[in-house]
Length: 267
Length: 264
Image (cartoon, each protein chain N blue to C red):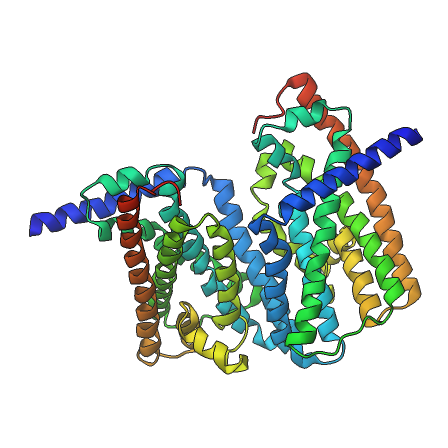
């Protein structure tokens, strides 16, 4: 039992590390700087200025926090999707499906590095807010904010795992990813207060990752305690796990179908 | 001379047609020129809708221009690199038609099809959001649109060879999208930005295009202001055409003398 657990943990860690090294070898420091530091800064500035034009300079922190937390979707959606789909694009999927390794550990391992990276992205986004847009963190319970960032990034990565599996059955996963990324910008409350959305979209927002995470981050930065945002965080985690499990189910379904029909590389 | 122009004109139109046919089948391009501007329009209408006045028309034009710029950056910017990756660049360099004419044709297709995003935003704001929309100065708006197309094409003719010869610059492609949205005042006035950014805006043809299109669509600008915008777009187009011809010459030297064109 213990030995099996240790083997699975080793598979998880090696799968995590090697898949990240193998599939993101193109991510050089300048590429990282451009896509993980400057692009988020540009996005935060654009939507914050748009928000200030809409509602006044006093509301800047609403948009800074919303967009900084939403940055977790860059790693959570794009990164994780590329991690899952990368095996197909690089032709290593048959070998992966040929191993006796525990699928759950393999699958979740693909998201691990992107959770770390996504958290770093949110921290950088908030730092941009502090440095350039007068975001005030003096009232903030920082460990609670760190927990919020962790849970939100995990939640986003859950959705990324599902998107990655959709990438295994379609050739246009970037189209889906881009659309999902922008839909999150609209419906997660990052830029538009949820009470301004029509009722149908308010319900949709409750089923998305980020919605509760962004609300929790805003409350914590305004001075709320961890206890008061705990229900939001639990909800955020539940949404992320639901997406992740749906992704895992799809992954197993794809493996079964591909083995039955011999359609691994032909979808 | 006239014969050459006619030949190049035919080549430009043929390239534009082929590029257009290819683009309408490419989901990445469809997202860039249609879906993303629509999503930005939805967001901006919800965010700015309460401001009243001509804000819906402002959003329609502004979100459409985001489609123009994103298309220029990601599609036209890659117009030479796409050929390099598919191994056809050397052949294109070798044909009698100048490479500038071929890339001009590609940019023409990219920029004109991006105008679809403005029409889609117009329909969205009118039919879904129920705003009453009308272009206040239709003739001036149409002429502004023509100047804008030329200005964007000239800008694209600079971006493409820069991306080919400097792969390090292209790594920042993703980070260049939102800054131009901001500096060009597509969806909010540049007066909101820090004062030191204003001269940067003045150097960008998209800023003058946005200013002319916003002014003529909402009727908020005077004729001298619109003429100034047209003049600036014309001047920048001529400057950028000149610079791009130098850049293309440099690129062809790399192709024919150094034989390093296909190397990243």
